[in-house]
Length: 205
Image (cartoon, rainbow, N blue to C red; front, side, top):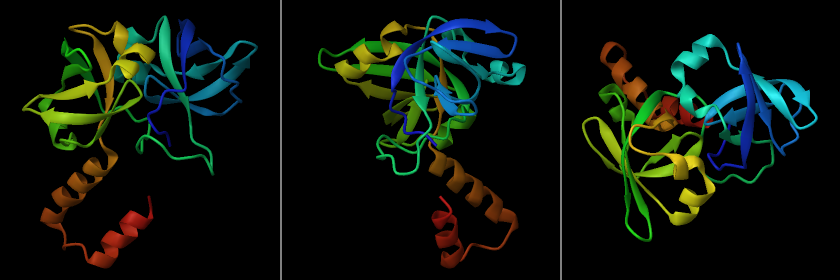
């Protein structure tokens, strides 16, 4: 599990086949889970100046690979006892979004991102969303796009400063919205859940 708070902007050394090699200050251990641009990946090799992760061909089809070069966001998985910040992030990318516009408001930036309409039900106004691993709040939701507002600090300290019209980004929608939608969809053909069953589901998270 992750929080969507970027711990470091690291550098890509190489991508050879399914092996992505990262130069980073973070001292990873073999088998660690690390979110790279929001995708949970496993450390398969530890190097003196970084680490390598496995990025299968299937994953490469599902991720915004144009951002897996030069600099990348990284966040190590949470450990038991860590302070919980940001929001609940699984590191499971749902969709690739396309930056439609970035509007500078002076003291903030409005970022408009387009996604396939089938993902819109999982994007909730004032809810949480993760863009390339960055935990953000949704402001407005339209038929096939949504708007975020980013403060200057976030713009400066993340790769959002490099994005422009047409840039592709990894999108992880709100986990709880996905689960609720799944439960409701399957209630059409099954008995309604009792409150006890709902409590049991909540307790499992």
